Amino acid sequence: MKLRMSKFAVLMVVVCLLAGLAIVRADDGGDEDFEFTGTVQKLPAVGFVGDWMVGGTTVHVTTATKIDQEDGPIAVGTVVQVQGTKRADGSVDAQEIEVQDEGQQNEVHFKGTITALPNTTGFIGDWTVGGKTIHVSSATRIDQEEGPVVVGAFISVEGTQRPDGSIDASKIEILSNPAGDDGHAELEGTVQSLPNTPGFIGDWMVSGRIVHVTTATVIDQEHGQVAVGAQVEVKGNLEPNNSIDATKIEVKGQEDEQQEVQMKGSIQSLPHSSDMTGDWVVNTTTVHVTSSTRLVNQHGFFTVGGQVKVKGTMRADGSINAVRIKSRD
Image (cartoon, rainbow, N blue to C red; front, top):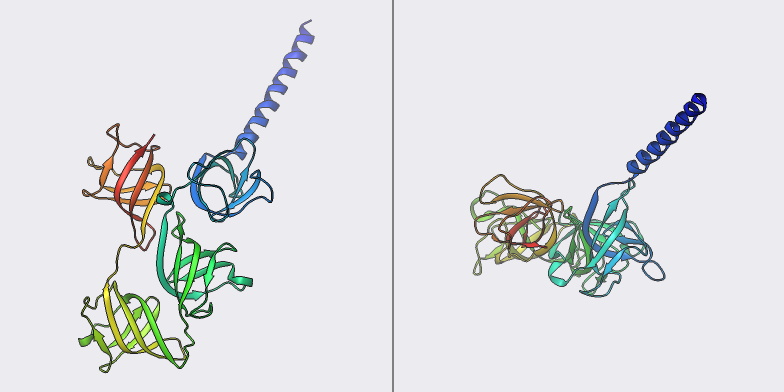
C-alpha cells in the first residue's frame, strides 16, 4: 500500500511539474498591455476578422476583439486606437479597437523638401521630407499637378503622427518642381539657419535647401523679420546641385503653430513637482506641462496608468507642448 501511494505521489508531482512548465511557457509568450494610435493601412478581404495593418504594425483581430465605430466606420485611412498585447514579433493581439474622431487623430500638416524616396512603384514606402520620416501607402493621395515626385521637390504633407514622430501621409501635394521650367525656382519654407553676416549675405538653409543670398538679393521684411523659424518665399535661379541663387526673399511671418494635435492614452510617467509641471510621458510621447497648461481632472489628481486626453502643439522632435490635459474615465 505504501509503495502504491508512493508511486501515486510521484506521478502527481510529475504532473504538477509538467503543468507548471506549460504555464511558464505560456506566460513567456505573453506581454503586458499595449496601446497605440495609428492609421488603418490594410484590412482583411472580407469582414474585420484577420490581420490588419495599422501604422506599420500588424494587428491580429478575432471575433473576441471589441470594435468601437461610434466616431466613424472602419476603413483604410481611418485613424484608430488599438489596445491589446504585443507578441515577440512586434505584432499586436487586439482586445479593443476604437475609431478616433477628428479631434483625436494627431493630425499634422507641414511643408518640406524631399531628400529620400523608396525605389518602389507609386513611391509606396518611407520618404524623408524635411528630416521627418513619411510613411506612404496605396491610400495616400499624391497631387503631382505642379511637378513630379523627385528628390528635391518641395511638398506639402497632411497626415497623422505616430508616437515616434513619423507621419502616416493621407495627402501629399507637390508645390515646386526642382527641375524648373526655365531655370527659375520658387520655394516656400522655414528658415533653418542663417549666416552671421551683415545683411544676411551668404548661404541660408530653408526647409532643407541651400539658398545663396548676395547683395543683389531683394529681402522683403514687411511682414516679419529675417530670423530662424521665419516663414519665407524664395524666388531665384536653380543651380545644378538643387540650391537656389535667390533674387528675392519675402518674409511671410514667423512659424505658426500649425501642427496642433490631440491624443489620448495612458500616463506612463509623471514629474515629481507638486504642481505637475514638467515632462509627462503619455503613450511613449513626451508631453511638456507648464504653469499655463490647463489640467482638468474631476478626481483632483493624475496618476501613472490613468487615461488622459492631451491637446497641444507639436515640436519638431515629436514631443507635445500641452495646452490642456483632461482625465478620461
